[in-house]
Image 1 (cartoon, rainbow, N blue to C red):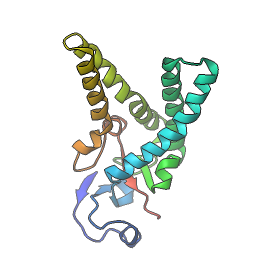
Image 2: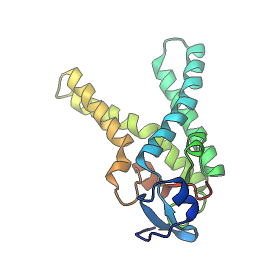
Image 3: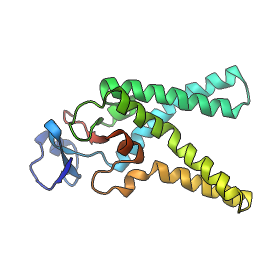
Length: 187
């Protein structure tokens, strides 16, 4: 995957999206436009609501008031949801609505089950894991309110990790899985 500065990047994308989007060369796909951070966040928000609402309702019906069960069920359903859809379609409903696709960063092919699974585990567990570790460590040194703030910040950093990769906008989960999120070429 190599960045490109060419202005000729496809009339389909040029007519539907801003011309200033970052573009990279990806395998057989050639030059593609990367998803914006806002588009990625919007798709993740749609998918989180689609997963969390029914999973939280199910957890409440199974064991009312058990927040731990709700969180675990949301994460488990989210991992299955993301893995199955990204491995088979290259996108989730949220990504499809916002015209985004997940592809292998080197070849441009669909990510496959292993990469989709690694990516899903990262998306659905990394922010929580970062928050738990930060809370545990900070809780040893700081009052509870400051430890909670630190935990929130650690979780947030995991969520906004694509902001730290200006060239390819790949988050931590994308790096582990070897994937990249791009604007779908046929829009």
